[in-house]
Length: 173
Image 1 (cartoon, rainbow, N blue to C red):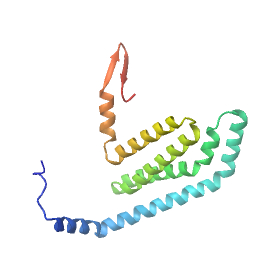
Image 2: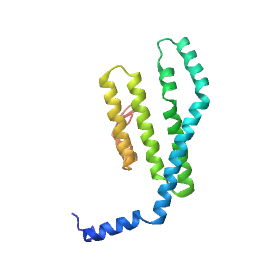
Image 3: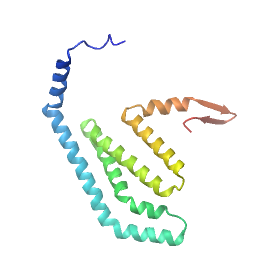
Image 4: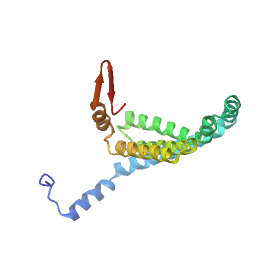
């Protein structure tokens, strides 16, 4: 089963990993990505400060117009996370186009999106089971994306379909 793996002593593997991690290019890329993440988080905080009065008025107006609707208040409370996610997603896309991929920035954006989904679902849903189902689904999607298996999983779920006349029902749907 493991015949295809090179037969190297453990200390040689450790040496190769240490050399890769300790390489100047790897450390520069990591430092740049961490600086970008810090800048995006500071930018999200700055956006929150700048837009706080406006978003508060918008949330209060929505609350007056739709008294039983809590989405505006929940969105206002979680705007820093939303801003951070958007800025990190933009930075990851720019990094992909410019440097060929900033995986650490992508992971930070995905973690921010996961955190946002968990907070909003916890605040909006009253049923504990529904909150847990949303949380479990969000964690599974995050893990599949982290491992690079999200696209194959989507494809596999979409291929499991039943056609009823002109209607196509798949597990992905």
